[in-house]
Length: 326
Image 1 (cartoon, rainbow, N blue to C red):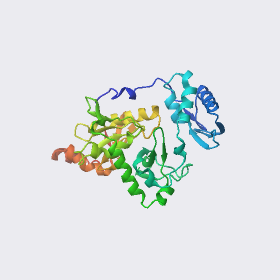
Image 2 (tube, one colour; image 1 turned 90 degrees about the vertical axis):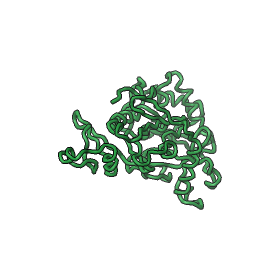
Image 3 (spheres, rainbow, N blue to C red; image 1 turned 30 degrees about the vertical axis):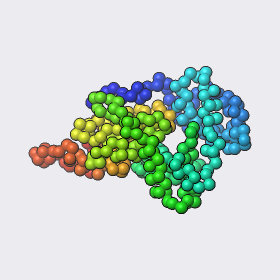
Image 4 (cartoon, rainbow, N blue to C red; image 1 turned 180 degrees about the vertical axis):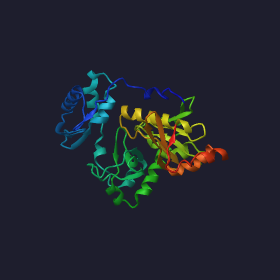
């Protein structure tokens, strides 16, 4: 099993995580001071500090919710002396139109795209965001309106005000994303394993996991192992007899990258076949790793790793919720 990182960006960044505790993640005082300085540069006023968010009023008197976690993850790779200026650039880069929803989705149909992320919580402030669950409690797809330097989410209200349902706009957004996804966007990044990475660098790389049968046709029967640890990370392997044992390694990459990168999505491993997503659960049991494939994976296992008759008598059937030891 390969033991090297498939991409230099997956290696440790050399900075500690701010950690977590009561009241949410703790950030270095230098980061919070830099943020206050950046707000002052922009003539923004902080109204309320709420754990991982700060509620602000910008110079036009508009309310702005500033998320701290993604900004901190982006900045911690930079020299701390630059943090105030970089934060001011980030906060000031949101175009005015991003805060003003269009009168109709038809007006921005050519700018609709799909973004993967954790499921939208109905207890969050943005309860009106339209989303499509992919894996319960783990992954969902949202519609966004793409701008040159930002994006805004499509809401349930926007869908309801249009002449079409959410499924129509979702397919339209996928078609737009397909148009931005050339065949050459998939690169092999680890020769020994054959690990593939989709990397366009436009903030929609993880979303291209929704287009695998278009980008990499010919794997509809067995599907792919997929990890989407962050917004800009999509790593995958076609499911074959040779890649079955690499599932724990992929899960380890996902968990490590999820902790380190900005805009995290999921530390889990997924199996994707014909556009249908499944959690491919892997748990630690002492020195062993227990792999718990979804029930539908049983027929794939039988096809790519057939068991001879004598061995079948000695081993119970696997794949219907039973754990496999690796």
